[in-house]
Image 1 (cartoon, rainbow, N blue to C red):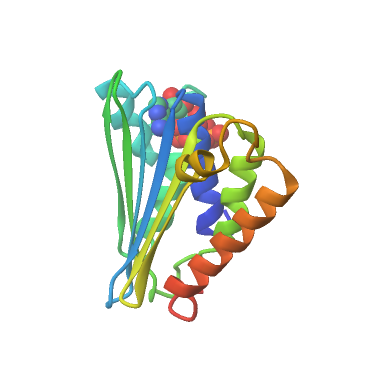
Image 2 (image 1 turned 90 degrees about the horizontal axis):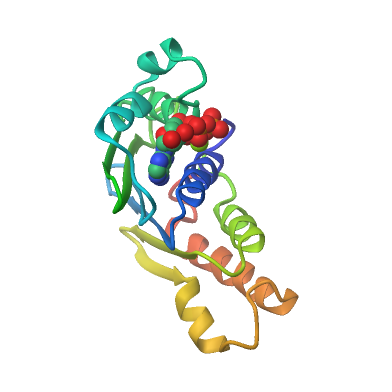
Amino acid sequence: MRDLSLHLLDLAENSLRAGAGRISLQLTLGADGALDVVLEDDGCGMEQGLARRAADPFATTRTTRRVGLGLPLAAANAEKTGGYLTLDSVPGQGTKVHIRLMTRHVDCLPLGDLPQTMVSLILTHPEHPDFVLDLHSPRGQARFDTGEIRRVLGPEVGLQEPEVMNYIQHLLTEQCQMVFGGLIS
Ligand SMILES: Nc1ncnc2c1ncn2[C@@H]1O[C@H](COP(=O)(O)OP(=O)(O)OP(=O)(O)O)[C@@H](O)[C@H]1O
Ligand SMILES: [Mg+2]
């Protein structure tokens, strides 16, 4: 993977496949350069056995196509920086993936285009689910929630309308710049 945003796209695709009604992403950058990325969904969840295998890259190489590479690759990229990936999943309730990365480590992937990743997710799933993005850094915080935008727009106007997507793209770009601009690449 070229950047963290592509990992997040892959993880969000897992949540979409799990039938999530709400997918929330929280990115918190500490003063020491540690970045905590937490993705939570209310999808179908995983049995304990699968959750354990899914997070473990070594287990994955031994299973034949039952378990993919999205989670192990994200875990490997976190571990390269001295971080980790943990997975908490409850069948029927949802899944939480926590990725910790040390952004000052030379092997840390760049963040990539997070606004564009969110826009692609929303554009390809304009009706459902809701996407939430929470950004925190020593500089400030910002929150984006398609649920709130839907409530403001009312039932007549869809998120996929060009003017709405344009607004969303600008809002997300501004929020990422405000919270992370110059702090992480
Ligand atoms: N959020 C989630 N909710 C429910 N099950 C999940 C979730 N994330 C992963 N899984 C389960 O774990 C498996 C492994 O996920 P992973 O992303 O590593 O691979 P994949 O999605 O199967 O394939 P790839 O990501 O390589 O296309 C998935 O096939 C799915 O069964
Ligand atoms: Mg996947």
